[in-house]
Length: 289
Image (cartoon, rainbow, N blue to C red; front, side, top):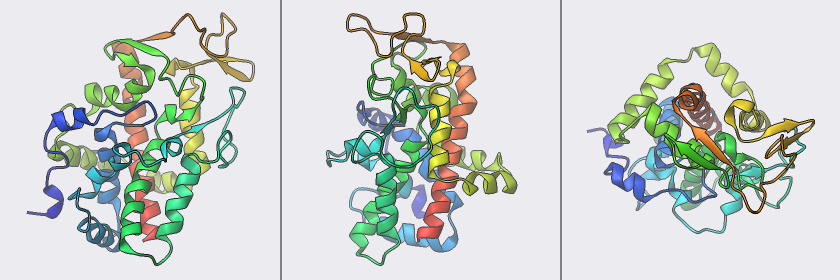
């Protein structure tokens, strides 16, 4: 049996047990999809190096599962899972961290620096896991957003997806519309089918862009009216346009209805974000390794 057919996580309950905290993006299934797509897209040389490094990992037997690792540890890198912008931002124009010393931009640059240097295997192993995670995070729209509502964590979700708006994008859309049961075989199959949906030209266009553009794609989706995250008031994307409030009132909690129409609208968007993340991660790893 090919090494990669070892189950990504043994059961769906194990995925559930690793539910992400407020600062995390994509659940275990989402990160596994991104990194499985990337794994299938790797050059022979890069795949061999990934396999060699993963064989040294005591906790994971394949790359896709390992990409969820940063969400399972308290490593002091919480701020690197996302990037926050001021409410009057209209587009992402740079890859500097706007409101903090560290963000997902600096995290990606750090891992790339490690991989591009001849270093010890332990550091390189950590970097391929973290890099896979960071690029996945960057493609989750609500991880390129605003700090005052914690990327939608303070916006309730009702209907088919319950919890908060951030968790809707982390995993509920994936669970209800994309994959269902998150077995290793289903994730491998999903990645294969997703890759069949793109042409060589589309792939080339995806990887021709840079980190800033990837972030701007997410930001434009986060602030689009159909996402129901915020509403434009001039240059500001406000909590509630009618009430002219930028942040949520202290005595109220905004709620978004995530019904079947919302899920249908954002099903193809979620698929596209996962696919782009995987293709772009593979391109980065092919160059770095």
